[in-house]
Length: 127
View 1: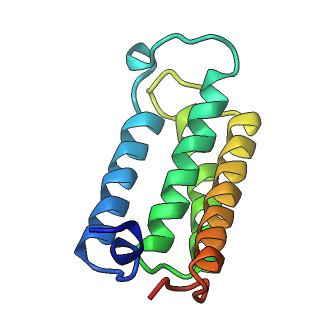
View 2: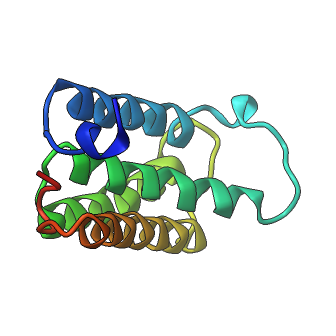
């Protein structure tokens, strides 16, 4: 199936992709500290940007309105940082991680907007 056709419907495939990315985000954001691999400095910020870009992109593909999705993801990012710092996960919340998450949301929403323009469609759907 060509990419254009795959992105035309907000059907089960797009909702499933969004659900998988949400589950992945839960695993990444709420893994205990012992389960988080060590990495060179800055790699964690790349992971945050990529994760939240994927959430925004798949959320738009699933048909969630941009403003609601963006606001929800920014709140989810903030909540995840707070929960990391107050739960027994032995992780620390970070404003820098939250900012990386926000950048990821913006990147994902802008990518969707670019795809919509590229295909000459509205921003809410590529159909």
